[in-house]
Length: 490
Image (cartoon, one colour):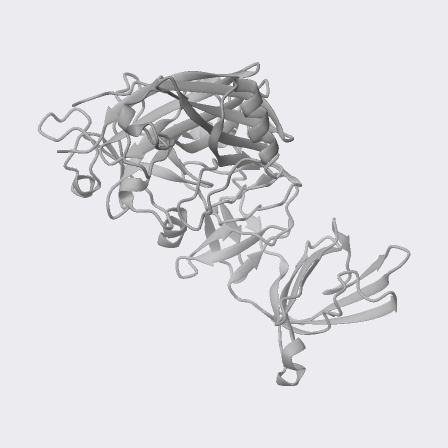
């Protein structure tokens, strides 16, 4: 059986986001690892300090300390601080703690930290101190603007990584001038580069050449609005070896050379056009990852040219048959700055919605609740998506998909269906039951420009996939793009 999905993907022609074309200049400093002596015993302080001198009389640092007993500490100033020639002193005084850290770069590859505890101990507490010798970690490069890069691909290229000084709008450079005269290309943004950094409000990068690692923007301060002019995302599936990715929508007008991005869970990465076999009638229609390896089925084929470590982390715990990604064009990837969230198969414990919400839903719909499932969230879980399943009534099963914020139901979608009597005692919305339905997995959450939520769902069975979206209109979630199509090649 052949079913097609036609999703209007005509995109409004908007200018690409700017990137920093001029290579960044390497700074004095970098990442230094504390030298632990054998006589420190079980309370040895292990950790790193990132120190960057900007060449204009200022410096910035970030200290990460830990002990074998599990105690950890992170300490850093909020902005650049005055610095002298290869050294600076930083005083922290909040009225109860008066502490000064002295940092001296005694050579290009060695740094010494000493401390004065004038009153109250250290600001990071737990009986830890940062004093000691630190040796340069040669795998990092620091730039004068505070950005931090990590060597990749046998130290021939760089990726922007966590641990640097990032705030406001971040422009990822195309290259970095390094010591010794080498200019190294910046090929991507590392995993978790801005994780938890709410000071970062925008990131501009070259979406045609630079990748974004898993969870790079997760819980940052970046916007995540989506404008309907970008059209709806399409769907893309991997080959069994994760080397090729195939897209099977019929699209009338579409520039196949335009870089696409594949969103999956918290992660996304660029796809590079390989070959268009969408109209080859000699090939099979439908999805089979083994046939995708050899281009044995119809579709438009792409490659994901990112390091294998990025790809491995992106699809961890999943087989090819279980992976469905959102395919979007580059302007959407730049505008939709909050990566999608979805239920994790790997390492996930299934959770119910709160008991308070369950009681609210029973009261609202006058039915007894069987169970609920929490399937997705935004930010610090203030905004959640949940599915509530009620007892069948008069041969009719019912679920409600709810968008909640602040512990209150903001918008709902009600789905009912007649059920066969043989399934009357089962949970027909649980994919583990061998019924005809299955609970959907959430692919992506976004807001439109009016703060209305948009949700993209799918649910997979061995031979078919159901794909649809819900868009908030007041206190209702309105259905769009509903399709059931068979993807497995017989």
